Image (cartoon, rainbow, N blue to C red; front, side, top):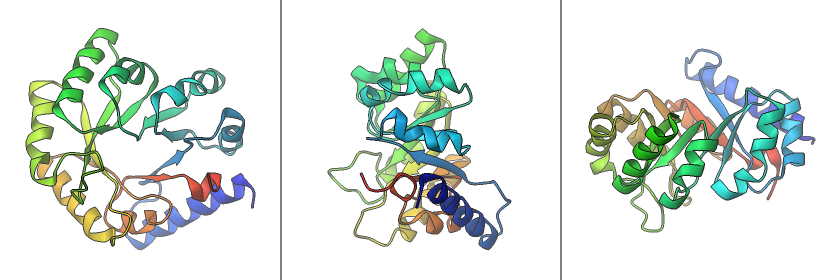
Length: 219
């Protein structure tokens, strides 16, 4: 199957999941996760009309996206991997959305950098719903307080929450927890669901799904 066919297959599954959940058509945003793929591998997705992409690493993204963005001005680029504070300046300059705000230090650094560059990428707080020690993210019990700090003290444009459920667990309860936390925080957007579980995520209210291998194939 060609990339365009895989992309259209994912789009049709998203549309069907929206319909099953009584959601308006087009209410779920597809982020095509292009990490590890070069510009030539990404171009067929652009030619098929995909404009929203996700990357894990700032440095890798700098090697391919400035050129692609110069070719197509309406690309929206999401950082979906961990952000180190020494990469914050580059991240603010390149990305339209940063989904992995996960600790007070990075929130302060982003606030300073966004003022310095007079640029305001939209932000999500990453929540470690499974409390996995190897995984980034705010603990669920600390999420409401952390979002309030980001918004009220630092003036950060937090628009949603993001999670990556444990690989060996049913994702449904994690998606339900993230949706509850979003309500408690007063944020509207939920970035959750990947290639193996994005339809489940939509049933629990995802507004953004991050799909890589189902579009680009195995890495």
